[in-house]
Image (cartoon, rainbow, N blue to C red; front, side, top):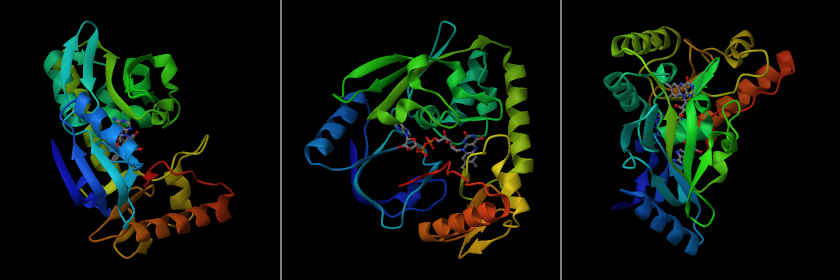
Length: 283
Ligand SMILES: Cc1cc2nc3c(=O)[nH]c(=O)nc-3n(C[C@H](O)[C@H](O)[C@H](O)COP(=O)(O)OP(=O)(O)OC[C@H]3O[C@@H](n4cnc5c(N)ncnc54)[C@H](O)[C@@H]3O)c2cc1C
């Protein structure tokens, strides 16, 4: 198993921001993951489970404990009426797989750069579709670090949230999918990626949407109307392309991003009286 000390987390987040992890480990299977969690617990160390780091803002001071990367927990198997997968499977890899096996129902996830584990915890999706709606069962490690299978109804899926965040590890998932011609799946995926390229800052480090959409409105619309597009703190910039994205145009620090977040929040609050809630997780 790879265990590193002082690994810069900027290397493992899509924002390219984040100080060092005291301990950084990439278990190869669930029993290694369980051992790591057990020894962190024994040593009283805090734990951060890291997927693709695409929804995270890690502070410049880093993380004073165990960062467990799920990168190698990436098994995938097509089964009756769907597929089973490990939490470390990346969405782009998953998209290739559903095309290959002609499994329809997840096309809307195309272009989301996370892992399945992160997507489940966040109930990732687009307007009108979320991954939770395709879940049959989720496998977790529970408080005693035993593996448990939860029915979808027990996962508490809500808007960009779930009750899965309360478990030490989301290990894997069974998804219900429907047979569909690969060419049709491929075309939908390409359409989805194309739309993202037109509406989002593409290829510039970010963590996706910074704020959740408030009920009945869009965070991006409110931020733009409050005049925040183009605001900057050092190399952190409110994107000109999509106002709900903050991008790292060079060597932005977490402190700069947090400063920008507070300025944007204050502007929306004073203009509309709406308190924006963070979608990204700060660590
Ligand atoms: C360009 C861009 C576009 C995006 N577009 C979208 C979009 O359209 N819709 C959307 O919903 N999101 C979007 N996102 C945000 C992000 O990709 C999703 O939230 C994604 O599901 C996060 O997955 P991750 O593996 O990167 O999770 P991480 O960022 O690594 O982690 C997110 C949270 O989940 C926890 N976690 C991760 N894996 C596990 C696990 N196995 N067990 C327990 N806890 C775990 C982490 O501890 C953390 O609290 C976008 C991000 C970017 C950069």
